[in-house]
Length: 106
Image 1 (tube, rainbow, N blue to C red):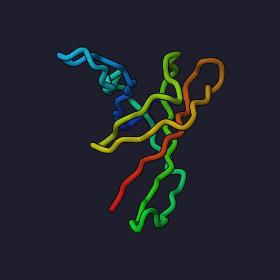
Image 2 (image 1 turned 180 degrees about the horizontal axis):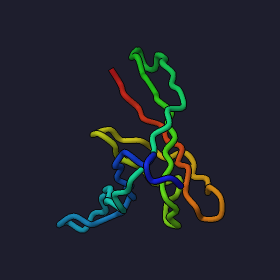
Image 3 (image 1 turned 30 degrees about the vertical axis):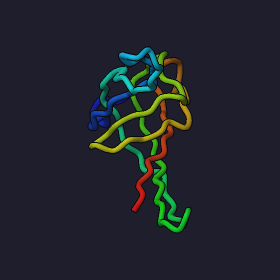
Image 4 (image 1 turned 90 degrees about the vertical axis):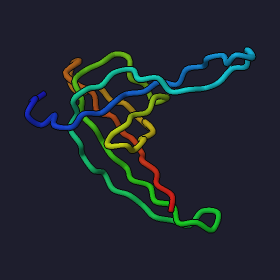
C-alpha cells in the first residue's frame, strides 16, 4: 500500500451500549481509531422518499490492514457520517477496502 495516496483522515466508530443514571441502556458511538485513508468515489443516487429528496453517495476507502473493522461500524470524514456496507481485505493483510454509504437529506 502506497502511503502517498493515503491523504485523508477518517475516524472509525463502533456502536456501544452504556447505561444512563437510571440504568437504562443507551446506544452511542465510540471512536475506534483515526487512520489515514485513500478516498475513492463510487457513485451516488438521488430519489424521493417520504416526499423528501434523499441523496446517497457510495464511497470506497482504502486503509492499512486492521483486523477490527466490520460492516456494523461507521466512519466519520469531514463532519459527515458514512455507514460501512462492506469490508474487503486487499492482498495478504496489506490493506482494507471499506465500502460505505453517506446519506444527506434535504
